[in-house]
Amino acid sequence: MHGKPKAAFFDFACCEGCQLQIANLEEEIIGLTELVDVVEFREVLTGSAPAYDVAFIEGSITRPEDEARVKDIRSRSKLLASFGACACTGGVNKLKNLRDLTTVRKEVYGDKWNMPHLLTYPTRAVHEVVKVDAYVPGCPINRQEFLTIVKTLLLGLVLKLPDYPVCVECKKKDNVCLYERGMTCLGPVTRAGCDAICPTNASPCEGCRGSVPNPNRNSMKEVLAKHNVPLEAIMRKFTIYALDPEAGK
Image (cartoon, rainbow, N blue to C red; front, side, top):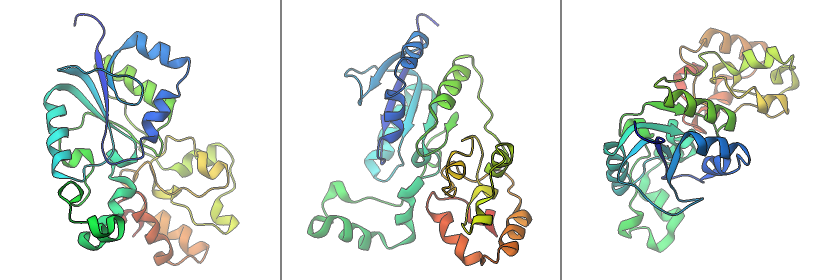
């Protein structure tokens, strides 16, 4: 490979908060630019390139033109990474999939709901449309985790995300379980790696990092039973970030 690897950042249906996390790396962004040549990143620079060594995608796929665009990016990228909950799982954008799409369009766009560029289809995560080589979960992403994943990709490796739940990180920090404080939390079935930042600050985990692989359903049921929390009370929370509902059953 001649010169620095070329990296590009693209956004689809999202708030662009994860790109802002990268832009806010401050002095650490200098170290990042020493590793890669950022050739496209709409939030921080102008310019483009015909091909990329690594393309980072934020946001979910919600329109036919989005699908065509992400497929084009994939065809011009050696590696493609999803970053942020919207790209990794579909995120909060997948909430619309639970309702009639025509009704959703009318509620959002009013009498303009039928304009061609507003005709969205059911939301999909990036990997449901194209091949994804790496994931950086979270809402927003963890900047340090992002930097680590970039470095591993440049070494030709893929960082293995934690395969245990947020509860493990809570226990390491000696946090009082939020269920003991009368709250409901998705920590037992959500992928760790966030250092339990929300529960540590007395805010229940909402599952922005996605479901943990092979969740311990029995453990989840035991927690709910111990604290007299009905299953229905927790299942609605699974829809916020499009977690696998089977993880809670």
